[in-house]
Amino acid sequence: MQPMSHQVMGYDRAITMFSPDGRLLQVEYAKKTVKQGSTAIGMVCKDGVLLVTDKRIVDPLVVPESVEKIFQVDDHIAATAAGIISDARILIERAQIKAQQYRVTYDNPVDMISIVRDIADLKQMCTQSGGLRPFGVALLIAGIDKDGPKLFETDPTGIFFQYKASVIGEGETEIEELLHKEYTQNLTIEEGLRLGIRALTRVVDQNFTVDRLDCVYLKTDEKMFTLVTKEKLSQIFNEIKKKK
Image 1 (cartoon, one colour):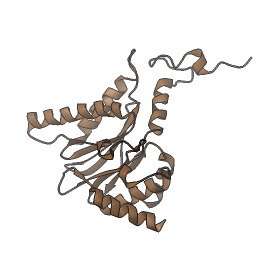
Image 2: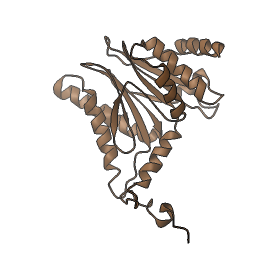
Image 3: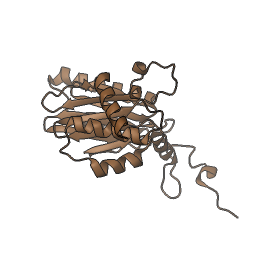
Image 4: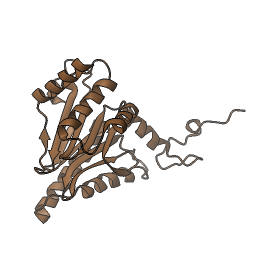
């Protein structure tokens, strides 16, 4: 007689139920949702930090500018997501409120680790509370702290790590291999932007266009959330397409 699978035995019916081999299956399903999400790349550069993302516009009738993939948490902090973007929006709005409260209370910008821990704590709580489901989203949080540019990633389990460069979403494995080969901490924001766009054009589907790009950077000396203009993105995108 064949042994019953964990799913058939019902170990994925409740978020609080461990399978016999010590897994929370609902959390693992949430991580699979992230891998199916639109791609987001983050890189710490020598002069700042940047995020390069794919907005994955699936309907030509959608206005590209209406699709929000990168969020401003504070002047010095940006975030992007892969997975269920509506889940991300709830987490980002919570982070924005925390950043505002910190400024009002202490008259100083909030430190990044406070924002990251708060998001990760809420995600973790949703992996051990009955009647809830895990957040089906991973976040890349980029910003400038008092000791320089930083990049953090949180996943649906509530764990977080600080990275030099990271990628979440579709094509994660292929882009991660490219980052291992070509990323260095000596890259400028301009060079990192080109690397990120080249990675997306190489890995994401053939219908990838510049309208799907959304990029932001924060320079160490300015500490200011800055969107890359459509003209700049088009210039880099066309140069990369010509070289292919």
